[in-house]
Length: 298
Image 1 (cartoon, one colour):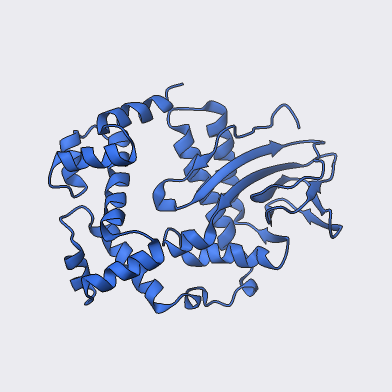
Image 2: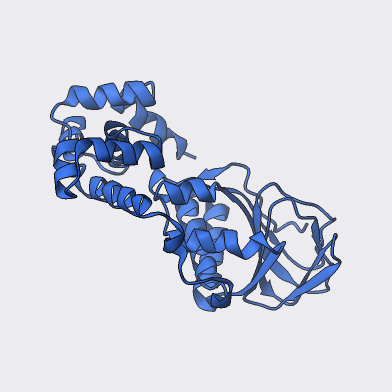
């Protein structure tokens, strides 16, 4: 590696609304850099920034030559290496995602993450021509954020990395897919997804399982069964999850009082918010705000 390389010494966990998606590392390589054969337990993206980047897969001896603005997604546990080249610059990012679980829980645009699984299920890798200007811009922003480490840079890096991944997945060749991503899921799943989306849009008011069931012309028992089958949680668990996550965001990004935040996320009393933080965060809302704010102090 060159002196200009960057390595991510911590895991970026996306906010809950992005689901179970973690960025485990990213690096910038320049000049004569090359890698020894290796593998990762996660997915890995190689993005060519300048010059030709040649990736060889050990088991098949297949060589993929990437040109600038081309990228490669490599499946987990596949041995590979980059060959030395007199002039090449490239970016790598390792990420993990429990795709089936994330899709099942409605965290992602289903088509995007079903695409990822389909693209590498039969092959060890997938070559993609990226959205040139937007991807290059995001990668430059990632480098700047990690270099300067300004306040809240980890949050910014998380959003940049997820945006980069979505842009790359969106540009996967259409012939890889049937165009029926949602049809592989049963009607009950789609109904459960609609229920959680309705809850996500209405958690800020006094929302009950009876109200939600009535909105979809279902019985409360039917709603309970769907949520248990596809999410493994109760109605109240899911509702409180939405409220807790929004309360966390408001605590760390606004100067609103804890009382106002409690009402804004749908609780009828401040005590309910305190009880929720005690149960899941083992601290008070004020302690959580202080802890999270201190994380971003250089």
